[in-house]
Image (cartoon, rainbow, N blue to C red; front, side, top):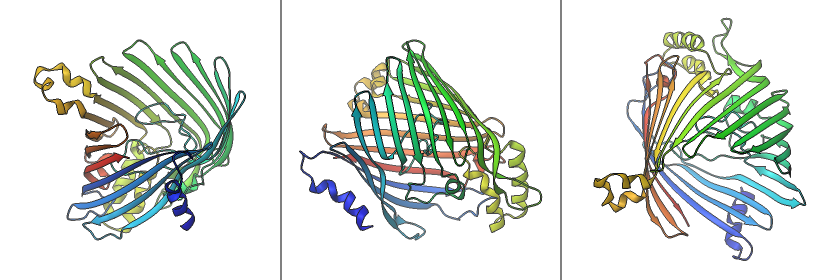
Length: 409
């Protein structure tokens, strides 16, 4: 802990000539209502919590670091113990040698394309679009990249166990060490990507992606991934609780379409499939068993499928956001100058097989921006709903409403 605190406070002892430092802070006040699910024991009252985050990113003589001081349950209605920790999100060295770039250290390396889900986050998956405070860590990485006229070749070796935060049983078991190669190509208005990777968990992985700009308003993107082995919770009639086992031949695929208007509206539609998730029949079977043991620890053991990267195999998402410039479209809003800093965003995630829905609404207001410092006010609401027997509707929370204050200095 002393070493981590020294790393966090080290930028304060450096002068401006030594490097650059960017500070971010977040306060997140949340209220959540539990749902009446057979998998989880609900609480009678809404829960209120207050969390805080202080984040610093620094660049110094070829080194880049990002550290976070996170405090959870600073205030809590159910008197949960508060906790604080210093987390090294990234800490790596980068240097260019002629036509080769070298990077080594703890690094967040993201080659995925997509908004709702990114199959090519193969080294350490990141949670997509959380409504509250989320601290993501990188993996131990050695990356060598060579650039040519068409794109680049990369060789990468990673170790995803370089994490301080303890994950679920599935996340801990899926920590991998591996090596692979990537080819990136840019041909006209189309980007291509191909990856071959081998690690001690998946025993071989092949992936590709494409992004193509059709015209100034339209773009489409897609990803496809195959892995030889994967870890998944398996429902077995001989055992009451699902067991974590190694499975063969996992597939993930995503196809998306993006439309952006000159006035500031942006719509994304995406569909993705993940063979590692439970099928509709598997969810039905475990839900029937959970109903028999409702409100008991045995019922919670049946909720193992909620640890998977995707809860259901088939997902469809619609995303809409409106840039501040769009308020100039209507006469009633042109005179409201405060709307120039107001951005609404809506996400709707649908499970077409069982009718589950996760709907999220964000309202973001830039209250202050001097160029070097800023303050944002964000209201976020997430609802887990749909058909009563769906996987999404039986998540622990029925809804979450958050007030987030964010700033830079």
